[in-house]
Image: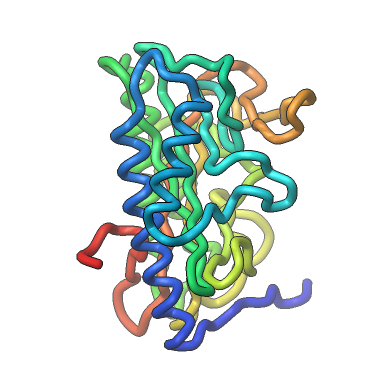
Length: 257
């Protein structure tokens, strides 16, 4: 198989990417804190648009490949790419995944989290804890000298330990000056080692794990929303990581601007 391309960002690009990632993390936290039962997902999307505008940047998602909303809002059995709707009201016991992207001054940030409303059931707690720990494990493996498959294996092992289905149709990706850059970052071990991790690479690690089967389907009405086939809940956590000479740097942690 041909070697998958990678992008090594320059120090000047990394400075722009770092700023975009920090602002994206800020917006993610603001949106997550704003989620309330009784509000519509359209209301939440509009709030997200205001938060993004306040950064001085713009939504990296709106208009991207035709996507019609400021952020992705996915509820319960929706895995990713949910579109805010005035008809969809958030319930008292829902779980809501928010995926945020901000573009500013030639840099792009991308990150996600899943919010639980009310007291989680044991299964929901297992889903959220397992997905977040899978992300942590993937980040820990994102070290110079490892390969993409080391990240994939780390995520997959945690998912299996928590008895969660690993979505295979959707993967993490490079990100930095464009929303999607090479290489792809699967959450499962596939063919080969994948690219070597080198300083200057920026990747999004984003486990998408299900309480039931790994199988998903795309909504045939909006052609965007991805749902679990069995209707069981799904969670999504995502951070951007810079590969360095030493420890991986999580770019989508909030820092002092």
